[in-house]
Length: 438
Image 1 (cartoon, rainbow, N blue to C red):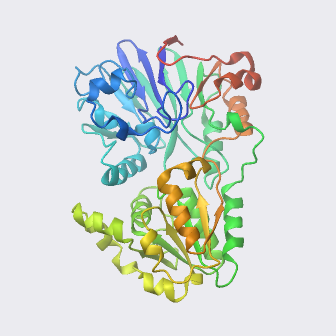
Image 2: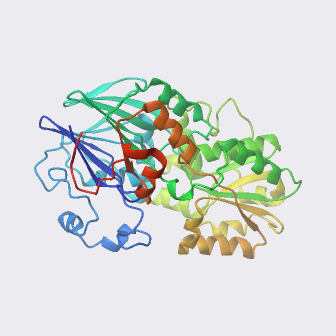
Image 3: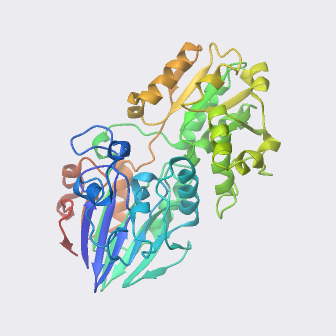
């Protein structure tokens, strides 16, 4: 079996790995990069005028022969680990005859994201794999393993061909609400794999304390426990684990949990999938006090795009901004950039809290910076409350101990050079585009 990291050997995001055996070629993930080659945030809009071949020439798309729609198809299949764009965002460039394999949760997240970004949706054949289970793509036998991550339905893969085994960790952790899934994966994977492709997002932050999702929920509960204090939350609409954390805080302090219509749609769609029945979505009979508010810009866009079915589907749970304004301290409200005008109609927010629950680096982006400044002008105190979706150093070490791989190959990290000091001589640093014979 031949292994090639097309992108991800020395960066976070843009992950793309190829495995080849007996004429079969399997691609694992095809993500949008997060950073430019020379540093700085990557923006696909900077390349809006370039066609596909030019994007390959520029190094935006990974140089994978026989993958793209302008070429004769030579890839047997594309396997997607989870629904974050840095792992799937270039799927719309692949040839329609190449099948894409993903979970039901990932398929749903891709479809939801494509409604707003019009990017990443596969244009051809889509195959949904089952978990638990095992499936075959050409010469490859694949066992998916559910793992804990900040994304619903994230998977690691145990891939076999020609008597060799490669484990692709994908993005994972064990300090979230489904941390047991990662522990189950480590219990089920037979030790002694030939290669472990191990994500190392946290390798450069070894001394950083990483709180668990439950600890974060407890901190949020303390913030929400002050009577009459307005509390707003700015988080990714697709970070399901974080939504659960804040719902716990709202429930414990008797606040009404108020989702914007986009976040409500995400949770409702995922809630109807296997494993999603415990999510805090509107109409879930397990829970009370979940309402939905309708930001002007999002709602107008949904109607303009012919997706009025989404706001109509949540209308029985609708709460008007005027209702929030009458008693803003009785709610925990989800907000984000683009909702600045709506905030002004939510009453007196002076002395309130805006919980910022994203990576701190995003605060440098113009859109986020403007939103935070607008919130501060309304009297909100902006407080960071976040935890990583990725494995700590201790969790990485626990994983290596359980899997006992013959070789560890760094991926999804800016610090591949630090692996050897932690894991020893089993570490092999690869370069993007250079094949390795497993």
